[in-house]
Length: 128
Image (cartoon, rainbow, N blue to C red):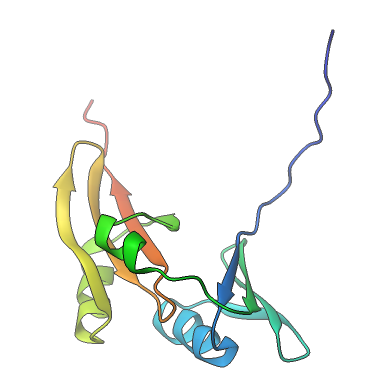
């Protein structure tokens, strides 16, 4: 039996946030996202380079366990990771994991104002 699946054109994770304006400020000012739309005072979509995140005002769940265990909520593949790390560190963002070398590349983690853990990874370049 052949199953046909829909063509997925994009994905947008939704994060529940305690303060929508604070979340919008963080993602736009610290990470360069633009507001795609704002629906009333409780829902928004933000985007950067064709990628989107939806933010919904609500009761954010306790994030202490995730922070303690470095459970990533979102992972961004980036270029110029050193420059990004230095910029976020200079803005005194909450660094969960310092910039480090891993077998797959270099990475670091930060927390957003609601405690979501954002990972940034720059993959190793293949050596020919």
